[in-house]
Length: 364
Image (tube, rainbow, N blue to C red; front, side):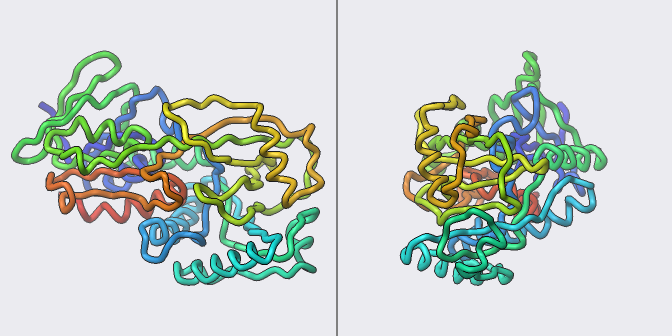
């Protein structure tokens, strides 16, 4: 039976970052059940490099977003991954929203984000023409990235370090043995077994299912999974935006915001809707909701140019407004060599390299 140091389950951006990091000093196999890497949350998002403004003090999200942002810009420069540090305008219209901006500014400083700039009403048009707001915050370190090229660069690093990646390979289960795990796989229809010392479950939307297949994991350590779908609409035509534009956050997300891709294409989203099953259905009937939300900060929107584009799904572990990343080691579940990652939603893309850095010392 083939023996490896580490098996990483799930080739989304977080699993790929972990595999690339571990491959620096270990034999690593990265498996993906789909035909291509990053087919779910990693390729169905806003492609934003977040600054780390919102997250509660000392949470994993706060720490790993800020650290991940720095690592991500360094990685993009080293591996020639396309990105633009275009900045973000966070807008307020009412006194209540202005107070929220102040709270966000204070939280950002606690998180180590010290470059925010207050923008008065008279200067907002300089940063965001046609935007209706009473005041705003400008985040210069927020950026956008080509997420596919980023993931491809992680695969390149993995392979340069003699690590291995296989697609069309489903995780069927793992049994604990004295020095690790016997891992059972379905490799493109063929059964296969191997042994590893470290098993890392980075399955994203499938992490809970994977964990339930690992011998020795008590079900009480597997958090409930809630699918939160977010739809995006693209804007066909000229627009005035050169920065990202966000309203103040809402309960389950950052609000329907205006983002740009590297080609300058404008899109809006995501909204939030909890659904019962994995479903990327796009509902054109939601357009009126988007029009109403966008016109709150961009009254000049030509709604005829707004078209449904795609949907993504976030892996929520809570139905309340706040949740942190869940990274479980043997200190939690008692299984040596096993790391489970649950609820890695936004800012998972930004934090991916920092997540890998954070768990790397935990390897056996």
